[in-house]
Length: 217
Image (tube, rainbow, N blue to C red; front, side, top):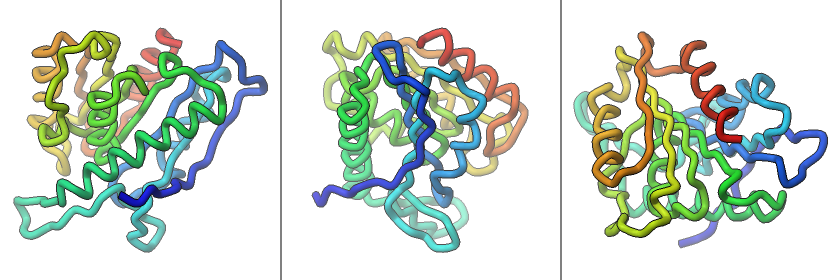
């Protein structure tokens, strides 16, 4: 697999020390690093916010972590190898940022939206020592990306904030509801909530995950 360098933008605290937490943002399919970064100014001051941009240029300012092939109105297909490479690329990026700013995994949050959420689940579940706290917005768990075993103690530290729009027209809410069921089977801590919106983040949703982050910093 060819390692890809990801572009990103950041919001840095005045001082980065042992009390600083890191939040890495992964946007959705067809979006870019500016999208989720609009949250950054409303988040705690002592939070280093890194908004990564996916490597696949779709044109017109849009990027993707991996390709989706829309064969018909009901089906979406992706290449499992490409999806797994995207997961590995993000895992390597997390290492790079943690090393650069000297942030420990237990002080690291990963926030994804849609395709970014699918990969956030995958990274945390496959590499629970890299990141334990995940905000999963408008996505789902791709069971093909689950590790073969999740029985070691490292998974006991995982913590997920999960939310979805009850009228999401892109990713059905039924897909999102399966995530807590899967996580509960492995005794992984999680909370799930729905908001009366489509494929997006309502103000109420934002304030809920902001509070969730603050309680864990």
